[in-house]
Image 1 (tube, rainbow, N blue to C red):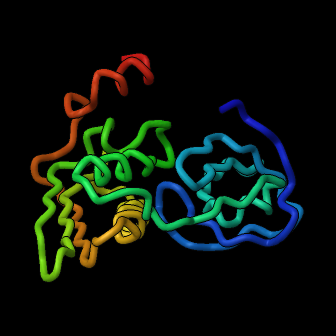
Image 2 (spheres, rainbow, N blue to C red; image 1 turned 180 degrees about the horizontal axis):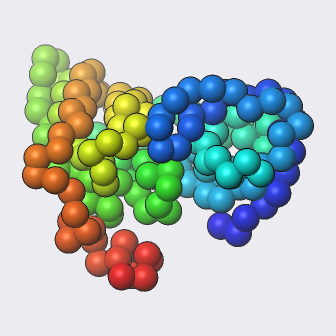
Amino acid sequence: MSTNQTNLSRTVEVIEIPSGYVSTLAEGTPVRIMQSRGDSYTVWTDYGQMFRIDGKDADALGLQASETTSQDVGEFSDQMVWDVLKTVYDPEIPVNIVDLGLIYSCKVTPVEQGSRKVEVQMSMTAPGCGMGNVLKADVEGKLSRLPSVKEVHVEVVFDPPWDMSRMSEAARLQLGF
């Protein structure tokens, strides 16, 4: 996405990148939209700070607010889980967490009466990344909206440490590696 400059039309809650701290940006703050992936936006301020704005607050950027809808389209499948994981993006890198190689394992197990539990182990590109809990919450929220999913457990792990060899070929090409 090309960078678009705009002024926030209202005060909005943001997450500072890469610290993960939650704060607000005031109405009228000039921002440049650096990335629009999944259902969030990465913006850059004139003060050189990067923030994540949730899709539900897109109207503050002058854009259509994203609708968080249930994933009740069709019958559950393991592929559906992977498709949902591919809608979660690292806020600094325009690549989804699957193609970045951040998903170390994903296990779907049946529980009572046709419902399922999804367990995910994922990592971050750097151990000190403050966005770990944010990305973890994104994964939990999106997977919990899948049909028949009753439990979601996401664990952020750092063993083995992530490195670029875990990225898909498509991600390497997209990033110019």
